[in-house]
Image (cartoon, rainbow, N blue to C red; front, side, top):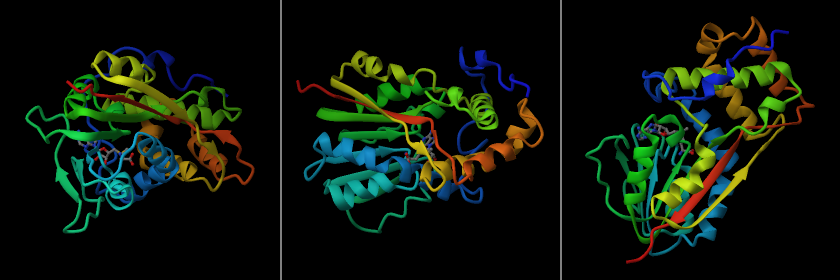
Length: 278
Ligand SMILES: C[S@@+](CC[C@H](N)C(=O)[O-])C[C@H]1O[C@@H](n2cnc3c(N)ncnc32)[C@H](O)[C@@H]1O
């Protein structure tokens, strides 16, 4: 087996200029895109809800969910956590399905738009978005600006602490090829996310904390379905732009469908910090 599908140095240095999430990959009108995002949400919502609950979200709070996706966290904030107002912002919010009236509002906007000024919030939440934005440092600073005094910024993105050590060659190589494709095609970069606590501290936030969740990969787990759907969505790019060998992607997909699958997925780092009161 060729052990060099991906040049590991591709993970270092600035991403090349080029495409963007939602236009060049993961277009919302691509079949199954809403379902793919939903599987990711299913894998991580329990952890995100627990963190937001621990930070005290509830009645009286105004919340902003940036890159709301299918709106699972936005709806939970409005319907179950009892926040007063929730704004679900996404460049394409077609999957959010907010009721016409109620505490949940939807806004179509690009978070990289320098003219965007949605207001001040007690909670600004942004999960699996900044890693896909070349301007992530600038956007993170603007998200911090949108937090009201005493409010919280909560950010989450992918960490891959496990797949380089997976016992399964094709899975390991496909995951590495996927990160390569995402970086080359849309600028996705997860190399900086373990520095979130320092970034939040440097933005003047207090009570900074962080946690990492690594979901087990088992045959019926939502995270397993998420990776299968993601790789199907990226099949052309994986097969034409990487050194994956013929049949290797299908071999990796078979591994994810195996009843004996017992591995660890890439995970999610969540980090939070609080804007000081004057
Ligand atoms: C991987 S999904 C994550 C969805 C949701 N936050 C979750 O964790 O389930 C990324 C979302 O960010 C949105 N998005 C990507 N780039 C964006 C941008 N520049 N401005 C606003 N939303 C963006 C996408 O449309 C998509 O809904």
